[in-house]
Length: 344
Ligand SMILES: NC(=O)c1ccc[n+]([C@@H]2O[C@H](COP(=O)([O-])OP(=O)(O)OC[C@H]3O[C@@H](n4cnc5c(N)ncnc54)[C@H](OP(=O)(O)O)[C@@H]3O)[C@@H](O)[C@H]2O)c1
Image (cartoon, rainbow, N blue to C red; front, side, top):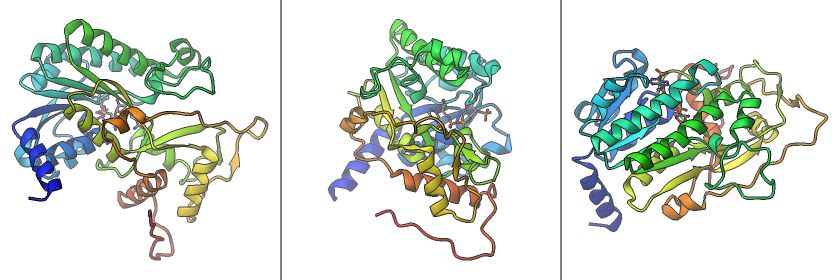
């Protein structure tokens, strides 16, 4: 047997017989994670608020779902339901969280995390992988702009609060709570901190990070902001989750990102790839100097085996094509074969 095939067969052998739980299974990132876990031979228990809701139908169509995917009804706030899904599992991927700046929803991120870590301890799972965010790492105005942002950095809670960045505020508290509880209860925890996640959607609904791109194509915004953002492909984020779960030596936090772009660069890529849409050409802030990207490191995840990330231009292209295919964006008129992209 060739080496690569032998390695794949060995992984499948490890995965088969293992049952893992993915919280918020119907979400953007979690759907790709469930797909990958099924592909690798795991049995998956996915928690969703309502298994019969049509927005989760895509999960049932995934390869291997009929044989190895079970959906459990569990709100993050309902400990007993979460526990029922988690008991008997070898591992947990905790991805469910409200992705919004709505202050009223923020407790759900924190209470949900507490519930998952408590259930993990009771179920004595092998490892919990928690989907955190770069938002728990870099929101800190006092950070020296010359330092390289890595896994040792933490967002400043007061800064998040004062800027009403409730999403980063809640995610930071949730991640800190997860670390404190994991230590207290003896749970093996590993955390993934992705930058903004793009790529094709498996689900039919639109998630928040995809709106980041979509709003520049619909005419709903006329200018772009003077800001920078880091990006990563959803398939790479799913891959890193599985990598940190399967690698016994994985520990702590893992930043996931391909590159950072100023919004001017993002709209330029969009306008170049998809000239048929009304992509804004003006910045809303013409007074201040152009914001600079901060330096960041993904050395830790690369050292663990994540050799390379999918280029950002491909992330953007695949996101827009997917939005078109799912009917969220009008197809270009008059109908003509769309420019295809070569990523070599
Ligand atoms: N996308 C990004 O750019 C990005 C970047 C960094 C980190 N993350 C993190 O990645 C995770 C997944 O995000 P995503 O982008 O895939 O967003 P998403 O598609 O909105 O997924 C979030 C999932 O969490 C579920 N959820 C929220 N509140 C819940 C509750 N109270 N009870 C049960 N389920 C609940 C949602 O279910 P409903 O649909 O029923 O609400 C949804 O399935 C989140 O933890 C997010 O913070 C995302």
